[in-house]
Length: 260
Image (tube, rainbow, N blue to C red; front, side, top):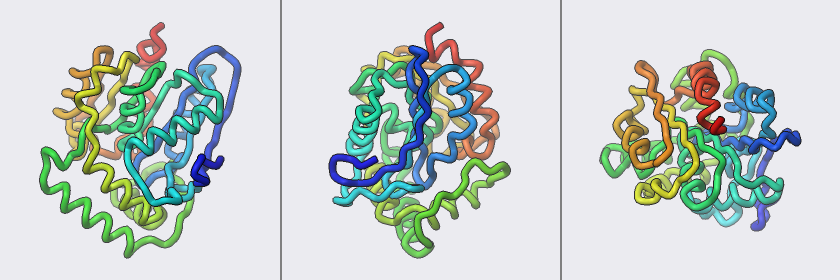
């Protein structure tokens, strides 16, 4: 689909008329919609319409035409996509920066529920000064390694952290990589988390240095209707490295998400 500014965004959707909220999926930085295959199938089998899309400059989506990136812009893009597909009160499922977009959207709009995997409520640079240097190195490396946008299959089994990181650098537009990274530095919705009225399921890995266990516990405590499931031995890429854990967790908490 085309956004109002002319940016072309890839969207994949399957619709059914069940009366249940549509499940809408947002991947993390450097990834694409293929990370959601198993979860899309699960929610579709539970009679939900499902929709996923590639963030600008990722997968099959073009970078923003005006090169302006921010989490407010990302949430605005989500709003455009929902409106174009006549979706209201969605069930939002996001990983990493996609989870942050989901949380930001839910602080300002109605949502049926939210699943946020490995997500933060403010910039990780605020409590980890070394993260700034990591972000700068990541931006520089993306310009060196980029080979062209490509739909890397993140649904493959056995992906390790190095393979995931290299694929992100090789196949994500450097403009988008830099825009996303700089947006991360300014991200802060901590004071707005209390506005979220929907049930929120938080999933994380105890070894995650980006969205730490303590950080996700704080997010849980700020959201009135929330649950946190944290896994020892898992890091930031829990969705890619152990997708079966994510699926099992969502299955076990499905009633909470749909308030059955």
